[in-house]
Every structure is written in structure tokens, then in C-alpha cells.
Length: 427
Image (cartoon, rainbow, N blue to C red; front, side, top):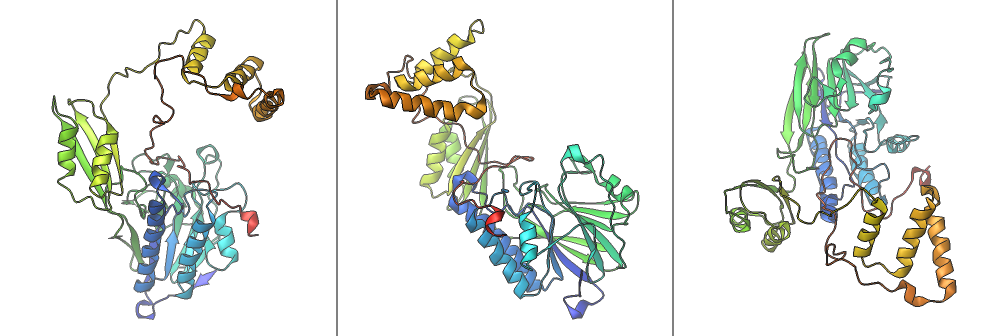
């Protein structure tokens, strides 16, 4: 496939916008507003692409945050890709680890609709550049990759891929090996997966530029730098330049508490910032007193913050730890079950499952059958909650697992699960 130079005023130069890790559909902190922010950032990137009249938008994977995006996420992506199509700006992309499916990919659907091109071993020419793609590949499958790409006749060649590559920090996939073993000599490797922008020129096995574009929105509290994308020019070599975009403000409050200091000091620090509509990330270190995150988060919310999260990096002895004897673990489990104040029916079901060693795949059927038997007996009181045997060790209404809303490595923080659709609904 071949695309002509998009801007006649620079026929000798090919310019592409390199983006990736847009993570459409990520409902960070379980807030619909954050989900909208990820789409808004992608829209801003493509608006810049149209305004700058680039020759193509190259996406390095993780267009979606989840392999089962909701209908609204799909419609949002289609709207953006449709805008690029109207402006005659090709959208070239690979599949990332978050969105990867075992069979047909969402990118395949968009390609069938004429809105995208999935890059692979065959060259896709844009101006003087031949683009190739390498989707995310799990570590267990990399050893036997052959890196065979079809030949091209363009002046430059660029590979687009998704993964954590050496020689960058935290890399587990050697980009230099790809350059060495590929049947095509690449002048640039445009990467996604690492959310922080990085660019490096390697000399071996031949001169080439390796660059990460970074994410378009902050998917974790560790992403403090400005979000954005790369503009890559191919003319008398390869030139990579970074451009930022405006995203929702994150206010980072770092509090090192001296001995005796506590929540009041942290709140005073928060009060020094304008946190209106911002995501506030509080990081606590030092020798100060233990603090309750809920009070600090409420303080920030009262001052207009969209959401606040407290990350206390200090270690404190957990006074609520259970005394469990490993001499009889079943007794310990029964004691813990007693603390929960379960109904007689619930305790009976628990005993049935544990005593019968039911296979995981049959648990639901076994529980359903047992509940049906209890209902048929007609004893409604068996479903009434019993007083907990403990003294408030666990409050089911107020205590829940911490929600940090973060993403790291290949972890896929889920969407809200509503309205998820499968590709078969469209094909």
C-alpha cells in the first residue's frame, strides 16, 4: 500500500505524527470524567495532526485500554478516525498488549471500514518512508521470532512496535537484536508501551533512532511529566521532536513529615495549590505520625479537586493483623467467618463448599443447588444475618480494598464492565 506525500510544499520531506498508549476506555479512579479525558487527549492529538497537515498518524499500540471496550469507547475511536479520514490523513497502527485478542483485533475492523491500516511485514509507503509493524509479543513467544519483512523501494524504513525495549531502562526485549536480525534495515523504530517519552540513537548493528512517544494521558501517579506525542521528519536523516498537549491537571503534593507532624501539615501543603478540577496525588514520607487518607482526600475534595489519592510510603505495624495458628487452618478460617456476621445459610454454604472440596468450575452450580434446597425448606430465618463473633474487626460497609486506580507493566485496570461488546457484534 502506498500513500503520497500529503503536503506538496515539502515533497522532499515526510512528516508523521507518532503517538500511542491512548488507552481509550480507561475509567481511572472509577470516574466517568477520567474516561472522557482519555478520549479528549486522543482527539487533541488528531486535531493537531489535521492542523499540521502531517502525512500520516502512526499509532504504536494500546489504542484501547481493554480488549473488550464498551460501545461508547468504540464510537469515540470511530469518531476520531473518521475525522482523520475526512482530512485524508492515513492512520497506521499496531496492536498493543492491553487490547490484544487471540483472534481478530479491533484494528482489523477499523481497517475493513477503511479507517486504519494495520502494519505488519509488508511495507506501507508514505512519501519516502516504508512503514512496517510488529505487534506486542509476549516474552514466551519472542525467542523464535524470525523478523522477516518484505523488501521496499523507499528511501527510508521505519518499524512501529509495542513493548518494553532495551537499551531503555526496564527493557526486556532487545531492540538491537531486532535491528540485527531483520531482513530490512530500519532507520527508525517508533515505539509504544513505555508511557514516558524517550529517544536514543544506536550505532550498532547500524545507525538508527529508537523513540517512545509516551502516553497521551496520565495512566498512573508516576507519570508526572507533560503528556504529548512525537513529530518525526524523514529528510536528510531522521529528526524526532516532542510536542506536549493540554490534559487534566495533576497536582503532586510531596510531604516529608517530621516527627510529630501529621494530617494538618499535609492539608496545609494542599492548601498552597489551586486544586480546582485537578487530580491530587499526595505522597507521604518521613518520620511523622500515621495519617488517615480519607480525611486528606476529603479536604482536597472540599477545595474542588476532582479526586485525591494518598500514597503513604512509610511502613507501620498493622495492629489489625489476625492471630492465625497454622496448627489448624480450618479453625482459623471458621473464626474469621464468624467475625463476618454471616447468616446461617451463608455459613452452611461455606462449610459445604470447603468440606466437599468442590472444583472451582462447579462452585456456582453447587451453591445454586444448596440455596434452592434451603428455600424449599421454607425456613426464612436461615437467611438472617447473625451477630459477628468478633468485636468489629472488619466492617463490611466501610472497609474495602484500596483503589489506587493505577496501571503498571502489563496490568489491565478494568473498565466498568457495562455495555461491553464483542467484535462478533460487528463482523
